[in-house]
Length: 451
Ligand code: UD1
Ligand code: MG
Image 1 (cartoon, rainbow, N blue to C red):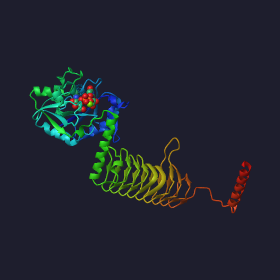
Image 2: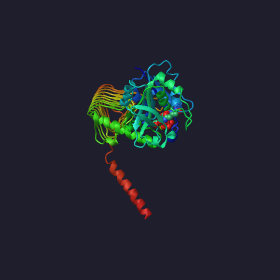
Image 3: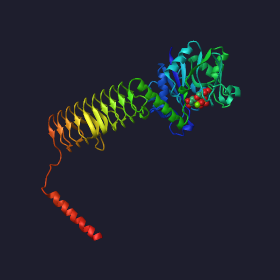
Image 4: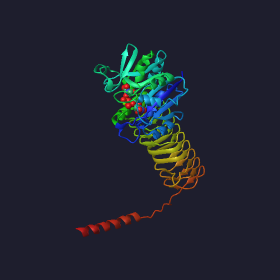
């Protein structure tokens, strides 16, 4: 059966106290909306409609980056959750299948839970996702009669007896599209909040003799983000889960609680990650690599057997070949480091390609930026770049070439050549001793004068 996701993301998120729309606040470095979209993607939806309102332009831009096929519709005024879903009506005109409603600020619903909702839909017309709340607080309460869900009562409307119910509404639901929009058309706003409550569709459906039920999920999946404190808690949940998954698939984390992962981090089996390694978006690490302590990786690829750090920084476009080494205080940006090549100390390699087996000496810098444009440095295979070489790009160093320490290389070096580009050394016999004697005499004189 075909599925359309409708993700509600129009709310202001007043308690975030932010210029950024709530659903764009990041968890694991990706907007929380991306998490909800990813959970929903497991249902292989034919359509995805995001209902945006506050900060709609920014939300639309973010959505386009996450899923270019997703549609954004605007809810000009936030008149309630039913009104929000209704904004997807036109976008889904002619769609035949189920609508699954998700919340953009509820990032952790699992694909398994969504699949259970779809499964329950086979025997029911409308399926609500509920959870047993440790503290039901202000959630809508699910009024059950056996397996049947009779109605959802919002906290504001609930009697004391109803408030005693701990089975709560997550807000998520699944229903045939035509039926859902039909029910929504009948929802009014005569209630304590003066809003069009999506929850009212339950009672309307039951009154029409439709089968309505609730599926329960773990409360942790319904964690909503309303404040910065919630955001920090959600980040902690995400990190704990992501670290747990890595351990599960055979990755060593010596101090898991100190490693910070991103939404899309991919790491292969038997990689070892030492303490305090931080991942930005877009990192893939193959099997058997070692990421040593205090390294920072973003938008890069690390091949099998490579060693990174301690204290290395891999920036977007860094591509490390098999068994290459990138050591302490080395920064790599938009550069390929060939198989077995080494840059072990205090180096910047940017906009470059380093051939297999090449050794980059300490203090080497690719001078890639002339203040206006960026330029490329090409280094061949098995070359030896002497310590403290400045490679002024654009420049090419041939296979097996050698640059002398301290050279400022401004012209190409042919394969196998030795490039010396530094002032020639001059030794002055006895001059050091004379210089020291002169300086000592000067100091003695000054000391005498100040006594
Ligand atoms: C809603 C449910 C409540 C449930 C709770 C779970 C209703 C009437 N109540 O209450 O039963 O226990 O969620 O968290 O549905 N939104 C829009 N446009 C609107 C209104 C809301 O896009 O006009 C979005 C919000 O941005 C948010 C979601 O819908 O992502 C839920 O809205 P919110 O106002 O938080 O509903 P609650 O009062 O929490
Ligand atoms: Mg809410």
